[in-house]
Image (cartoon, rainbow, N blue to C red):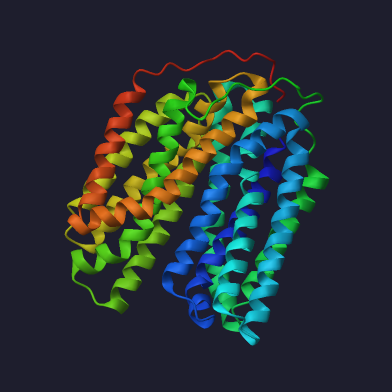
Amino acid sequence: MKEIKPLMIANILCISALMAFLSVVGPLIRELGLQEWHAGLTVAVAGVIWIVTARAWGKRSDRTGRRIILLAGTLGFTASYMALAAFVDFALVSPPAVVVTLFILIFTRGMIGLFYSAVPPVSAAYIADKVEPVERASYMAKLGASTGMGMIFGPAFGGMLAVYGLAVPLYVAALLPLIAFMVLYFKLPESKQEHTEQDGKVKMVDPRLRLPMSAAFLTMYSVVTSQVCLGFFVMDGLGLGVIESSKVTGYTLSSIGITFVASQIAVSRFRSVMPSLWLRIGAVTAGIGMAVVSVMDSQLVLIFGFCVASLGMGMIFPAFQALAANSVESHEQGMAAGTVSAAQGIGMIAGPLVSTALYGLDPVVPFAAASLAFIFLSVVSLRHKDRNIVPEPAEV
C-alpha cells in the first residue's frame, strides 16, 4: 500500500505541531500573566472537542470520502494554529486583559483540537479501506510509529526554537500541517471511487467496539499517567532534587518514546499476526512493565519498567485500531475509527484527573492500578475472536 507514506508524513507533521505547544505552554502562561490551571484548561478544552468531533469527522468521511476530510482537517489545523501564533506574538508585546487572553487561547486551541481530530480516525479508516483484515495491524502500526515520532520531534524542536522567542515555535509549528496538506493533496488518492450515503449504525457504546474502545482508553490513560506522575514519582521514589529529577524524567520520557516507536515498527513487520494476539501480548507486557515501575528502587529499574510498559503499549495501539476496523462493515469504517479515537480522548482527560488523585493516596497506586487494568484487559481479550471477512474487497 504505497499510500501509507503520505499518511505517515502527514501524521508526523500534525502531531509534531500539536506537541510543540506543550514545550512552551508553561513559560507562555507565565509571560501572559495567567495561572497554571489556565494551561490545563486550554489543553483540556482541546481534548473535549476532540472527543465530541472525532466521530463526526469519521461519519462525514464515510459519506464524502477520506481524502477531502483529511485535506479539510489539515487546512483548518493550519489556519487555527497560525491564528494562535499571531495572537501570542501580539499578546507578548501588548498584553490584553487576562480574561481576553484566556478566551482567545481557549478558542484557538479548541479550533486546533477540532480540526486535528479529523486526522487520526480518517487516516485509520483510509487504511481499513485499502488493506485486508489480516494486514491491518501491520499498517496501523506504521501509522502509530509515525505518531510516536511526532511526539518525540514536536517538543524537541519547540524547545530549541523557544530561545528565539515564545512565538517562533508556534509560527513554525503552524507551517507543519500546511506541509501535510500539500503532501496529501499531491500524493494521496481517494481510498474509494464511491462512498455510501447509508448511515453507519455505530453507537458510542457499540458492543462490537467494546474491546478496542477499552484498550484505546486504557492505553491513552496510561500514557498520560506516565507523563503527569513521572516527575513527582522520581522525586518521591528516588529522593532526588529538582534539577536531578528533571534529568531523570527527561531520560525516562525519551526512552519511553523511542521504545514506543520501535515496538510499532516491529509490529509492522509481522503482517500475518492477528490484532487480537497483539492485544493480548501487549496487555500482558504493559502490565508487567507497570508492575516493575510500582516496585522500582533505582533509576535503572524505573527506566526498564517504563520501557517494558511502552513496548506493550506499542503493540496495543495498532491492535485496537485494527480490531475496530475488522469489527464493522465497510460503510462504518470512518465512524468506528472516530469512536475509538474519542475513547482515546476520554483517556487523555481522565488520565491527569484520576492518576493525580490516586497518587495522593500513595505514589505507587497509579502504576499498580494501571498494571492490574492491563492484566484484566488481556484476560477479557481472550474471549474475542478475530473477524476475517470483509464485506467489500480491499484495494492493495
